[in-house]
Image 1 (cartoon, rainbow, N blue to C red):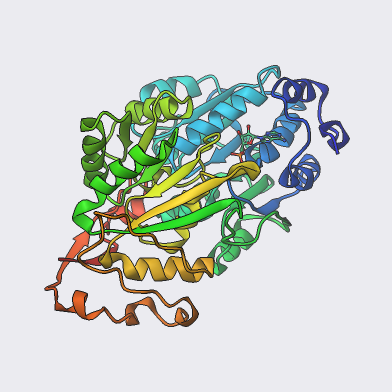
Image 2 (cartoon, rainbow, N blue to C red):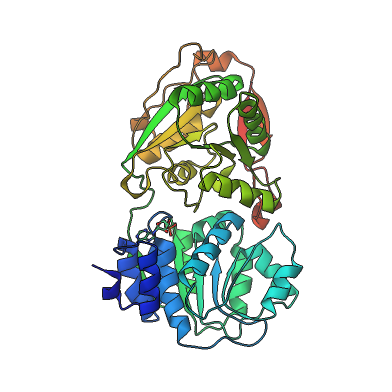
Amino acid sequence: MSFSALQLHPTLLATLDSLDYKTPTPIQKQAIPLILEGQDVVAAAQTGTGKTAAFCLPLLQNLTKGRRGPANSVRCLILAPTRELAAQIGDSVRTYSNDLNLRSQTVYGGVQLYPQVNGLKRGADILVATPGRLMDLVQQEAVHFTHLESLVLDEADRMLDLGFEKSLNELLTLIPKNRQTLMFSATYSNHIRKLAKLWLSNPSEVAVNKNNQVANTVRHQLYPVDKARKGELLAELLDRQHWEQALIFAKTKRGADEVTEILQSQGFSAAAIHGDKSQPIRLSTLEKFKSGKLAYLVATDIAARGLDIQNLPVVINLDLPHVAEDYIHRIGRTGRAGQEGRAVSLVCADEVESLQAIEALLKTRISRKEIPGFEPDHRVPDSHPRSQKKSPKSTKPTNQTKSNKHKVVLEKPDVTEGPGLRSSPFTKLTTKK
Ligand code: AMP
């Protein structure tokens, strides 16, 4: 099937041709006709499936049929959970609408508000926004929705994880009811389904992947190691494996900074992004990584979702994520579009509960390999995938870990845009020797 069979506008077809998009992806084939018809759509699709074009192309085409509204008005609103994802969608909108007479603007926190307020004075056909900054702009009366025709909730599950449900509910009271609404989510919990019923009107359902599915082109590998030696082992692996690039996930901002310093001190091209870095630095570092100028990007989970990085050979979990599903989102950055990818995890004894939850989700035991010289003093207890239905909390520590005095500490995850979590940032108990 070609894009022309989807009844797209000749200008959009020419743009797609210039981008070398030859055939629509499955989500594009399914969603574009429905969106062109003006239907509400709820879609299960992750980044990497071509979902941005799946909603942008038909929405842009529909927008060409009307006219821009007055000052501060918006015709199409696209909401995304993180600043990085909003910036990326904003870039895609600009690319796809290049030859259409449509004005788009992107707004997110961490940068000055007033240039955004000024930009909105002209009104926008498309506004891409993170919910927090959008609510700030609403309060400043810099934007109104009386002319709104369509609303996209992208990565809806992540927006809820970050505590944006209240903002979204508030926002939906300000938006005309006779709009077109599209909801994209990587996972569909009962809660998300309930909200979809509330926010969308008789939506068509589109699914291109099963929940929590991992690309089968990704090879998983686990290296047991003591917590204190993770940075050293990482440098050793990077030295041995000669991966051209790697995205490295750390649990905390401090952990990300510490390991970046270790890598830099050993001459690796490495930089960190997390919530304490200014937004311009976050974006420019990400840009360097995407363009291949930076070899190793160390990030907290702000980079786990939505980012489109071409040909990434490996994702490394310096620490396992708190939430098992985030393992799937993290490694979704590699092995994309049928390419080979690797997911490498450096795991210490403290992380056995997270490991069990991840292996239960993947329904497989990740193969382990000890690196000579890095064998852990504190053995990572064996996980038992078959008995993983029970709560991971029931995992019995080995004699060795039992004998260590465990001090309970609260670890603070990196949350940069989540009002819900801001009030309760300590989400996970971990044990530390
Ligand atoms: P997304 O899932 O929207 O983040 O898109 C993932 C990547 O696929 C982006 O780099 C897009 O530019 C690219 N892409 C989207 N649709 C197509 C297509 N039909 N053909 C080729 N590349 C595409």
